[in-house]
Length: 152
Image 1: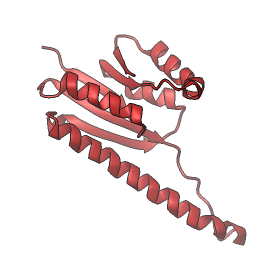
Image 2: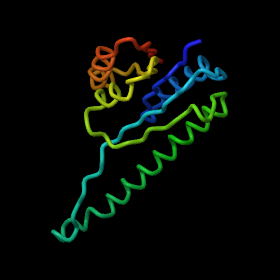
Image 3: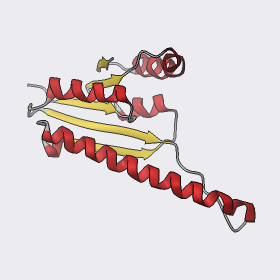
Image 4: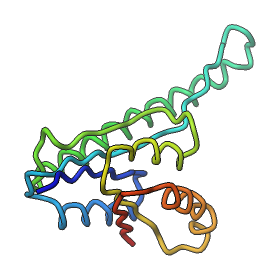
């Protein structure tokens, strides 16, 4: 049987929980599955507080954002542990938590290289569709030879 190499972009939304449930219900317990939880974040800007005393005011906000990033990374690891507890092989579930260098769609497309299954989540909200449709359109349009599952 062929190996399922699954990419699951994860953005901490309730809709992403649907994608996680789909992956568990469809692939948990199978030995031929490798799953990658994938999250890219906008990097925090480097601020030189010595260059301008006004920049000192930004320090506490930057500390807050840095701690929030650490919490998100830990939350991604918690999801990984939940997948393992649900029947995935621990050695075959990985987390990718990295700084975004390109658009979100381009990062997903790059990460999907070598995968044969892409699990996306998508909500039904009108405003969400307006802002995210282009990401999904670009990702889906760029995929070739990849099974795309959209959990709604």
